[in-house]
Length: 501
Image (cartoon, rainbow, N blue to C red; front, top):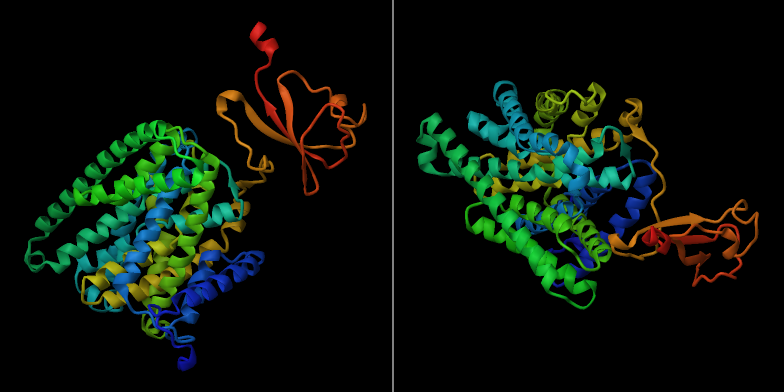
């Protein structure tokens, strides 16, 4: 398709805000339509970017360096938000499983897939297939599951899974990007170093393992140190309102990522660990509002990153990569991912075979693998264009086959269930030591003894804080007359009777 010249706009021109606003608006509107048909939002963002790109409407964007910078920035925010939403209490029972999947699982997936590419498809993947290390690079780029895709599908569809599968998948997807990133960067460095190509295989392996271990150790130390430093800082510094607190926490995340990178550690790992410690150990003022801020930032970053990656794609150049991409994608889906899951989870007998099958199915690809595929391109590695095209096609395949069928597969395996409706407290928040908030919708049965709030005869330790009637918020009092469908926000805590005992 020949691009329409009237729409041929350089993304770095003065019209960039107009361009971005139009694309974002279209993406959000189509997301609402796609949700009805079970199409993942992130798939739509990618497709819209492709349609708007050079092979479509004609928006030219070919700056891979800028694309990598924007993508890496977006990924740090997405990963940081994932850490802020990770509860150690909920994750503790599946911490070992998640850690194995996000480290050993990524390595096994990359090794098996690299072997398949080398022995079965190396003649189809261009120059990168000339060496096993090149095939392993292509596999490593796709080694992780994408946190943005997993979070979007699990939470967007409100899919609740048995056997703590949902928590395990979110933990794995949030923490396995550092491993895939490290493998990708290490192999790229070896392949782009003249001495690296001539080195003996065992020398390259030892070099890679040494760098990987260094990155993990430094990243872990920095992440934990900055996290506990942030805990102390947040308890001492009192800022007005939630906006400055949110910005302060975000700056701490960037600092953790940056200082780890300067010290030759894994910045993404440090960032994630810092976020977990802040969420679980620090006393965060206005925590509910802070988390809402990061949730909104994450959606914006996901949207912009997927649109940008879609703009970078050239569908016309992907046709020659279609067959190897389909073969490699099917191998990942049917062999490599299930093998890594069953090997890593073999010691955990409490997990059913059905649970392991479902976890195997949720090896979702997304922006992460596409972003990692940009590193060989930026490094000027021969055959890097083929890597980008193959990974892009596999990501589309993954979002279509796995993303659109996850709910049905979970139901087929009898591993999903309907959860109680989320508690609605209209933004009210109280410290845990003061009690807990619950909501209640008034029914005719509640009003059988009388229609006033006093007639409800609530037990000691339970008080109504707010009443919503339609669009109105009412301050409660004993003689207030209640109506069916009134929504009550209730606080439950200790009463003076409890103290007297």
